[in-house]
Image 1 (cartoon, helix red, strand yellow):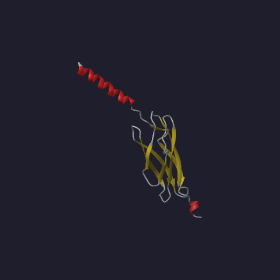
Image 2 (cartoon, rainbow, N blue to C red):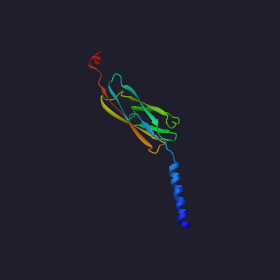
Image 3 (tube, helix red, strand yellow):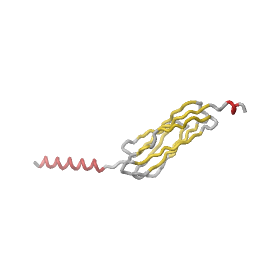
Image 4 (cartoon, rainbow, N blue to C red):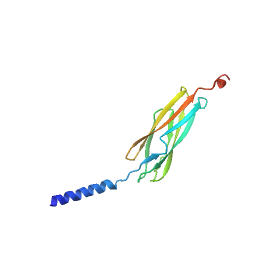
Length: 135
């Protein structure tokens, strides 16, 4: 009888411990942004990814890593409270790149249960118009 009671109390204590753990959760308005078409004579393009901490603990973005040196991301270094929003600004620099369609991914490492989240930029950099080349 004592063993059953001890086992029952242990199971309740473990379940309460699991329920008490709170996590942040990052939720983006969009996970892919299309930068559209732009010319090689204007190769630097920026976009903003907006997100909200929909979890119930403070969110920390530990690190952001872009798939290519041509892509740089600026992100908040402070805590993002539950319910609060933030932005990640992504800059693509197509200088010295070949024209054409591109897709770059940005990996976001956080303290949430799902530690890694990916966002993407896509676009199409066109060649400089012939009228500008002949000048």
